[in-house]
Image (tube, rainbow, N blue to C red):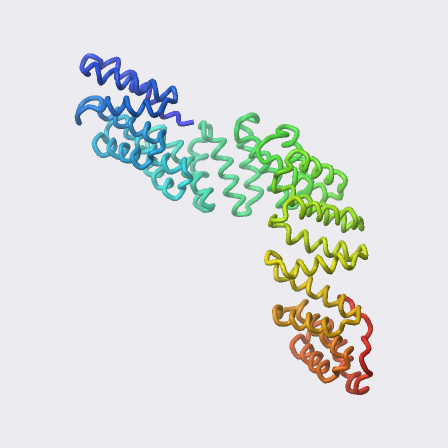
Length: 459
């Protein structure tokens, strides 16, 4: 709420009562009608009346009318024109009671449209130019908010710590403590952030910042791996604010905290509630991915597969789709649905959203399948492709080793020798190097046994 607008209205009303005799009736009526329309939310009409009320420069009412024309312009969406009006108040009536309001309104005009970088210096000018005006309190808090939104946590912490030290019981103190906590989170100072969140709640558990602060406590505890404290705070949030802001975010992390505590059944129930209560939330994708992974770790591969498939079906463009597709391939592989798994891995390898490591791992899995199926040439081509795109272990050394095996199985002993020698030379510390050296020695001794696959190796 912009309380300074209401305060200015009372000032204007007092002036009107004291100076009605010295102002032309038409200007007086237009000004009063403009203020009435403004406070009733009829901003276009307010602007018409207030413009009519503008008197000549130097008249007792000019500063007031210029200011209110600026407010009406701002409400009508013409911020640039509004700033010119406010600047006129500052330039021509710097000692007017409206000067601090004009300076604050310039800052506010940037703040309300998210132009944080431009708002910061304007709020700071309120503090510097009007150090004794009550508006400096809100200006300092708003400047801190802008710094938080600009992800400049060091400056935000400095400013907001100064604020709560100077104004510990100001009306903006709960918001300041919350913003301070957010800045501390950005610095990974979780214990200090939790303390600031608690102070924000301490002013009023029913205040507008309380839900955000309570969820912040739970998330900060989670970041510290204090899963019991995290689960308690997040569960308390959902009990108090079941449809509160970010309840979907809170449900997701409550599930993760419960899962970390070994309470998987409760975690699954929380995530099911998330899907039921906020099916369009992006956090549902996260919940499905984590639930599928948890099922897979418990050996419940069919349930894991269902979670991954549900994620892909509901939101194929999800940022998590690549992870779900990759995990689905592994789940299908573990259940013996090899054709489905190979099809999924081929999709992972070809999809641009897959990470380089996901693409490489998928290509290796397809190549291994081809090798087991006796399609040695096709497998060798896949391993060779991996070596052109990934040069680091544990993928490159594995691909180099398996390439040697595929070539050896085709009877291409010279090429296999080169592949094994390359592994020994490029990756002397690989766990596969001793095995490659042994196979190279066998090739040398036996001069190649013919196109028979060597013993199976673990991927």
